Image (cartoon, rainbow, N blue to C red):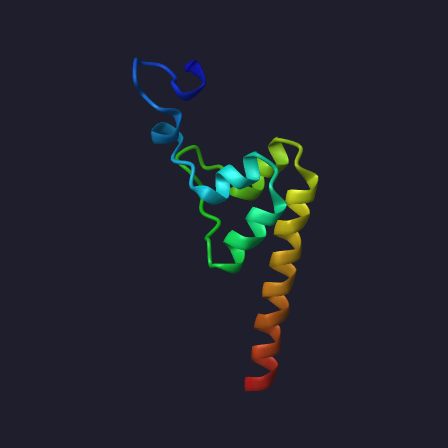
Length: 88
């Protein structure tokens, strides 16, 4: 199918753009899968085109998925602040 190929014959988009599972979940607007991946330490790293998973969700208009990323980040910051207070 043409949707999986771009440019030269038999060059998959996934190989060119290097989308990981978090990018795909963000692209498809699946907040539950994004949450599961983040809870299992999936990292928000830019792909070959310098697009992060949260960027992908935003570009696709997946607002609930963007909220999932924001809530996860807020939770992570709160946990880091709690550790600093306990150590400090």
